[in-house]
Length: 301
Image (cartoon, rainbow, N blue to C red; front, side, top):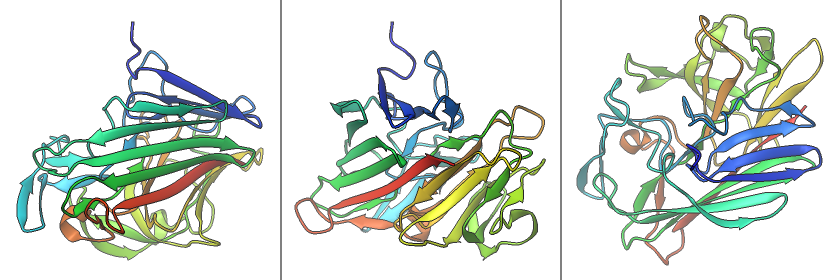
């Protein structure tokens, strides 16, 4: 029998423990001294709603799956038929290959072959590393093609503190919210205000969010989101490096279970293959700029 997400790679250090899967190189579980820090998925389940997945070589949606690059008009498969978009890249359902597995870390690789809609071969690499400071995730892409390739990356962890989010306080270091149309595609940005202003910690309550945030405030190279239970002081923090200028935040609908909140690190916003906003161009193979590494992490509070 093969688990829905394939092989399971367990790591632990300093009270932290995690399970990373062969399928999508996903973060299935992460805990600290027995307390869940992410709302993941079971060993006998597949990931739902992006839980723990890596979003490469682009995060979020591409309008109609169409874009132009290097003088070519390209068409990707529509993996989100409801919005008629290509969603969350090409690697989240792939079987990744184990590179190295130690007691405290695991690294996996996946080669995206040139294909319809993305005609470049790109090597993807991820390292999950646990220390006393928590989990550090490093995502790397290396262009193997003789031509430049468009690239952005993201990840899809669901943070949790206890079994419900309503009474938790969320702090987002974001000064802008992405304005979207009825297909969740960007039309611009505006300053955060009212219900989407979490620049100071604020109770989530019954608020429903599925929004992109930008204008992140990085301090000493990191922008940090926190989710805290004010009754106990326990919480979880997600930090992103300066390559990550965007976060997508999603709360499950109020009429169902609301155990976790997705806080998705992104190097570029939705539809960056068309807008060009913070899109990275990987240089041709073997030349300076043909590789990009970015990092983010999660720690207990």
